[in-house]
Every structure is written in structure tokens, then in C-alpha cells.
Image 1 (spheres, rainbow, N blue to C red):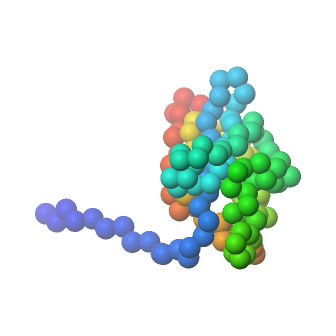
Image 2: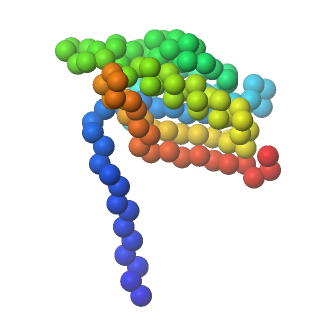
Length: 133
């Protein structure tokens, strides 16, 4: 019996790595997290939390409050990231968490944000579902 297994995926263009996370909080319900992704979120502990739901305007404030916001806005000759797409993504994930309370934990890390007008892409996603909800 052949036990070799392969996973083939489309390669992504490079982008700026961010994280979106969530946990169900006993008192507040779903709480959403945003920060620079990959190992950077752990190294500099730069993440912003909000109670769900959030709209695109509140998502924009989250982006601005991170220490890494300069990297997303265009830094050292780099073009700005697609912040509009990221705001939309954060608000939609927030709405999904409200509509699906069975989602106990969510970790999108990294999510790549491309240059302005080019969107974003979830590269690695882990979702924990509570079967009792």
C-alpha cells in the first residue's frame, strides 16, 4: 500500500504578514485580535483586541493602533498595503463570529495583505469548533 501523501497549493505573491485571531470569552462573547503576523506578533507583542462585532471603521482604528501600522501604510519606499481590504476582512470575520458562536477559537496566521487595490489572502487558518453550541 502506498502511504505517500501530497498537498499541492498555488503559490502566493509576497505580502505583508498579519494575524487575525479570536476566542470566545465567557463574559463578552467573541473577541477579535489583529496584529502583525508570523513570528513578529510573538516577538514584539503588538496585537489589538476588540469585542465583536466590529465594523470597517472600528477595524480601521485597530489597524492604526498597532505599532506596525507604519509598515502597512507604506514605509521606506514601499507602497501602502490594501487597508480597505483588510478592514473589510476584519469586519466580516467579526460578523461570522457573532453568527457562529460555535467557533471557539480562530487563528489566521499569516494573512497576507498585498499592495493597495490587490486584496488580502488567508494563508494558514485554524478554527476550533465547539460541538455543543
